[in-house]
Image (cartoon, rainbow, N blue to C red; front, side, top):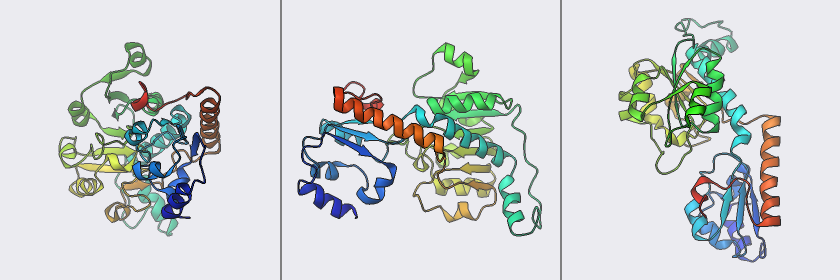
Length: 301
């Protein structure tokens, strides 16, 4: 089935009377984005869309709000797994492990030309852009490696939380200028799309390491390739890409880029947490007409 077939089926009245929709990440290959066109084909009885995932950029929340449809996600269910992936990429990128790993599989040990010496995380400034659950989780893990934590967020954390994770709040420009490693942990929306592009790379320290486990669209991949070529960016660890499953050729060809095919939540335990969280939202919607974790944009709805 493709989007056209799904729209035809929905328009025929196949789902009439449904009040709650359970949306899986995998359904995107069939339905595409949940937008105004798709919503217009669904029955007027639909009042809730329970999305299985923390990121919900595939759901047009304003369009849902206009239709009176509430949207939920699974925020904290993915915190540990995504932060673990972030630390894996951070350490791997700092140590230039991608070069040696690729060479070893081709039978060339560390390669004809050994990789440049890596760097230790101890004492380095980790800048976290987006201090939600995943960002805070990553901050705690990075502390164990002796890193200094700075962050920028749309709202500053409470002093007690800052103290707990030993994080210093700075503005966006300062974060770019002072970070040895920059971790992107913010949601993708119109205001954050390509928030990291040519101007932002120019404002960073020379030799910075960048990690992205958020969404590919928050960073301009073409600008990243240029920053790598110029030496402004030393190494990168990526789990997400602008046009998944496509990856920019300049990233595929660069041995200083550690690439993972969007597996940040790819664990048995995390998938179970996400399923349970989504089912609890479905049950609450059916039983009481409320959601356990409505998306922030609809908090006043």
